[in-house]
Length: 418
Ligand code: AMP
Image (tube, helix red, strand yellow):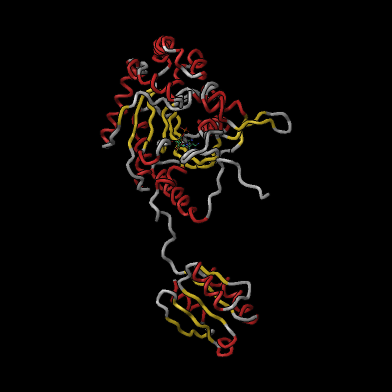
């Protein structure tokens, strides 16, 4: 039996690759205008990088990581997200000593063993943005603004911004107690995971995917009502800066994001067009992570966008090839083929998009192929033409035909097709 790809791990075929390239190029263009530089990080990391940063009792670490020992018995994990790796690279290369390197973006595949469905896969791709060593609320607002500018540039429809604050350790500690008290009262109704997390990490119940827990969460106390003065002030500042940029948002006190490292402002870009998997991207501040991973005590914020979800939301025509001329060279006979072969290469080097037939098929078969490739022009080289010292050029759209002398052929073709 033929081998198939792993469930939830998909090929990206040439007919949609144009959309991927569009998304990547818009990201590069917009992010660089905001002062971001690309960083490329490995797909494989030591497992403890993720378990320590994302949090031992998160869904990702408990259930979703692809983890295995390598041949030396070292425990490795296919990255489930990028932030931890970018922070690790920043620390490892002492980039805090290079003031020009503060704003980064990266793109690539992530791996989570989730239940595959529309918009949720086991290998998926993210675009990630991370900013280090800046804790002004203006930076939070600018990061959010850049995410929205990017989505608008791609014409992603009906995006809503959800905003929350995860506070700081000072406000989280007393809140944890009131949440734990509430959960104690409903503990028999919690799923088995949440029964356990109730004690170890009660905040995680907010992102439990079990329906019955969802209903209990609706009545739970929320961190937003327990912020300390500093966090309250900081959140107000972020909102004021967003207002100054005319960014609309909805406060969503139940949005806690699925990773433990967040603090203060968190956000998600949501659309109703994706069904259950409605988050296109999300992120927030994670001021304690760099120190927790053994680096300098520097604040940080950022976001991740799911590329598959973006592709699902793109207009059908987005990323389609531009209307440029495409030439097909149809050679009839060995002589013509020998003459056509170097000519095709020369035309490509001159900037034209050119394809030829290598299988010595009939003219009819070659014209059919040219049609399939959506060639705008076909250059026919046959015995008759060679004997006359010409080539026949057919304009496929206009259904017209003309003879062009072989002498000076390249210049003539460039003049017509470029
Ligand atoms: P997260 O890293 O969980 O905050 O996710 C950030 C974004 O990545 C989400 O808003 C989604 O767009 C995307 N994403 C997360 N998990 C998946 C998945 N399993 N399949 C496809 N996209 C995903």
